[in-house]
Image (tube, rainbow, N blue to C red; front, side):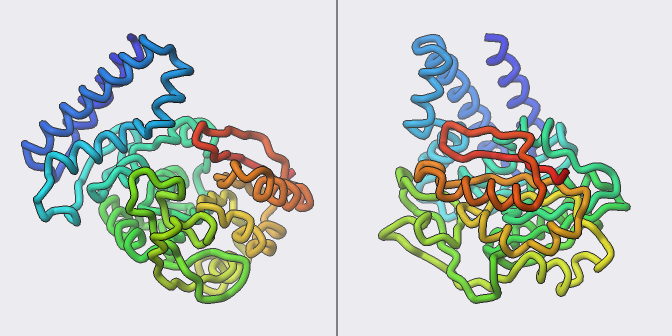
Length: 322
């Protein structure tokens, strides 16, 4: 019950600091939070912590989904789906815009908070590359941690996400961030970026991906985007200087992590003090992605110092050159 009280305190604080939302929407969000908190508490009491977690995952009952579905039901018939919400995150001292959908909300409220707080640790003056920046959570945090003497390069392939990423960079007045609307890949080419499935129960990715096997089959909406290697994008696009070394690369690209690494051989070779945070997808298919990534890193003197596999099947790893 102590955890429930902490969650309620966090939600009330989060709502108090929200901006750009009318009163009826604020009240709606507040009561959705109370409902979700009561639901989770009941499931834990009835089933226990482990079984309740499994049920929440199986039924898609995380807060982002509940919030989105409740909001959509309440606002059915209203033509306001493209409006943006604006919130403050006092804990991390930034503001953000997000669309009225569950994935934006989950992304910006840090469902990976433990990794961000304890394992992703850029310091003052570092150069950070955020590959698959989405709408900017890691970009914003990295920008604040590296300070005015550091630099963040945010790379996002999807034009819609890139527009919102740019808005969030401007909103927070991040003068040390450079943003690129590209797909980081293993070669230069035009490539299909598959858009998320519109189906709520889709087993495929809810985010954008360039990997066809991660796309929502039968609903393969896509846009064509420019792709190139990370080596090219950082140096030829003047994101970093020839003599500069990268200190952190975060990669979250829905199954294309290995392709990104293959296009970053020069950067990984010349940077002596570098760490990688990689979210590896498709673990349900065995080691087809994890094993090549692990071998690739081992050959380049990287040691995996942290691993965490989520119940939804993704694995975060942090590897550091030694």
